[in-house]
Every structure is written in structure tokens, then in C-alpha cells.
Amino acid sequence: MKFQLTGREKSELFGEGIITVFLLLLLNMSCYILLNQWVESNPGLQNGIFLIKMSLAFGPNDVKVWSWSWIAATIMLIIDTVVVYWRLMRRYRQMQLRHIIAELHYISDGHFDHRIPFQLHGQMQRVVNSVNALVDASVQAMDEERRIEKSKDELITNVSHDIRTPLTSIIGYLGLIENKQYQTQADILKYVHVAFLKSKQMKSLVDDLFEYTKVRQTDTPLNIMQIDLGNMLEQLGASFELEAQKKQMTITVHKPETPLMMDADPEKLARVYNNLITNAFKYGTGGHNIYLSAHLVDDNTIETSVANDGEEIPLTAQKRIFDRFYRAEHSRSRETGGTGLGLAITQSIVELHHGTISVTSNKRLTSFVMHFPVHYQQVKD
Image (cartoon, rainbow, N blue to C red; front, side, top):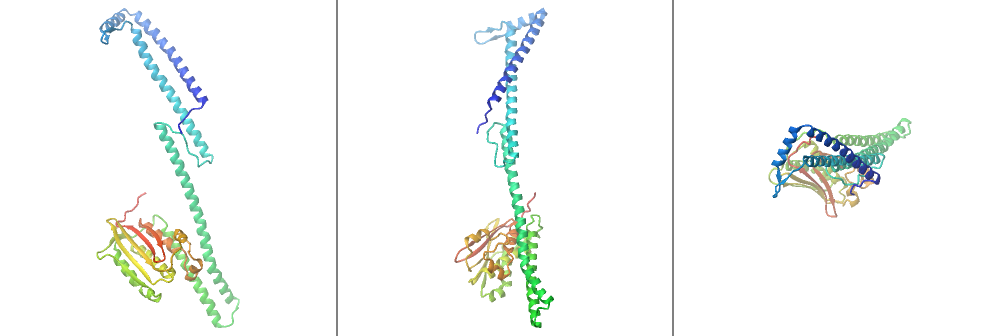
């Protein structure tokens, strides 16, 4: 929207111009009278001006300047025009600034969806753009702060809920022993065993929660070194071979024949694959194969994936699968002892390596695909 002055401002600007012109006319008359008296009182100056007039000629017809007053009047007129223009533009800029300040006050009153709508010229437009950009950044920061606060509340709620369930069981079974509500020694052993399993479940949750909060920090130190990703996948496949046999599954590794070198923290990167392979064992219902693969996309990027031919992940679950404490199937996750933090930890570690992770799933294959830079570069603030 083009900037427009109000009727009152136009009148104010017109009045400013009239007053300026009037004052300049008075000043010009005063200067002319003083100059004229000075010339008339100085015969030598009169002769000098006459000689100058006779020596000056303008145009093809050699037009002479017959009066010095015309030269003085012309000079004064040029100066007056510059002064009037400067004064009016200065007042016009002040009015524009006044409108900008009024818009800022309106926004500061809580109208954060409002932006300065009018278009100006030159430096004033840069001011408007800067103000609008600042408001956008402030709104985004407030939204992010509210999101983080909500996220913290959800984290506390989820942790409290997940800890309360096994803790209630532990207290209940130990309470039976404390109150001697058992028949035989076997009952005591049974109650203690259940309490022990629930304690391990709580420890697993606390460990995952600690790991999650640690890797979520952007300044988490990484022990970066050059590793051969292909060899790492082979070692991981071998380490899970026994568990795969128990699950009647086969782990297959696809890697290039030449070394696949990249910069990474080997311990944390191994945690990524451990989480994904463990998830394939737990939730790849009906699957018989787990595929680990890695290859060089270009000189700067490596693509690697962990896939299984188990049950398809619903599309709605795929969109939220990296959210902490999210479980695609709550009951099944409870039975398998999942905390709901594994994939959130995985995503955080991948992002610490400046990589990305995504999931695709259909009836044939469920794949977690990651892209990593070959060379890790520390991001500076």
C-alpha cells in the first residue's frame, strides 16, 4: 500500500511551505536592500560591476546583463527553492516516521499479526522492512518459546506417567512382602522378581531420558574421527547375528568394495544403528530380513539405511515416529519394553552429525534412510 498523508498532515505541510516562503522573501528583501546600499555607497564597486557587465555576453546574439540585481535575484531564487524543498522533505520524513512509530505502538499493544502496510522510498523503506522483519523474528521467537515450554510440560507429563506405572507395581509387590501377604517362599521370589523387572524398566527409561537430554544439546561434544562406515556395518551385522537367529531373521549388509570413509563419532553413530536394528527386531512383525546398506551419493554425501520386510508402519505414524514418547502401537510397545525415546535419540544424534533421517514404509519394506556429510564441519555461532 502506498503511503498517504492525512488531510491534517497535508494542511500542516502546506502551511510549513507558506511560512518558509514568506520568511525567505523577507530575508531576500533584507539582503537585497543591504547589497543595494553597499553598491550605491561604493563608486569603485559600481565601476567594477559595470565593467563585468560589459564583458559578459550570453547566447548567439551576445545578450548583455544590464542589471546586477537580476543575477542576485536568480541566485536567491535558486537558494530559496533548495531551502523550501529541504524543509518540506524534512517535515515529510518526520511525518512518515511518526506513522511508523504509531504502527509500532499498535503492534506492541499485542497486535502481533499486524505489519506496517505502506510502501515508502529510499532509507525509510529499509526502516519499514527492518521493523517488519524484527516483528516476524520476535513472533517466531515467542512461538518457539511457547513450543519449547509446551514440549517441556509434555516431557514431564510423559516421564511421570511412564515412571509411575512400574513404580506402582514395585511398591505394590514390595508392599505385599512388607505386610507378609504371601503364602510360600515361592510367592516372595515371584514378587521380588516382578519388582526387579519393573526396576530395570525404570532404569531403562531413566537412561534413555538422560541420553535424550544430552544429545538434544547443540553443544554436545562429539569425538569426531575418520571411520570406514562399511566396516562398521559389517561389525554391527555380526554383533546382532545371534539375536537375529533367535528371531528367525537374517541381517544382510550392502556396502561398496572400496572403503567408505566419513567423519563421525563412532560410539554415537553405533547407537543410531543399534536403535534402528533393535526396533526392527521388536516391531518388524512378520519380517525375515534386515538390510544394512551404505553408499556414496556424491563427493560430499553418504546415504545409509536400515530396512526390514516386516509389518508396514501406518502413514499417520510415520509423520510422528521421531517424536519422543510416541508409540505407533502403545500396547505392543509396552510389552516390548520400549520407552518411546529410541528414535528421538536417533534423530538427535543424526542431526548432531549435520545429517538427516527419514522413514518410508510400505507392504514390502520399511526403511530408515539417513544422509551424512562426508566431512564434518563444526558449526560456529
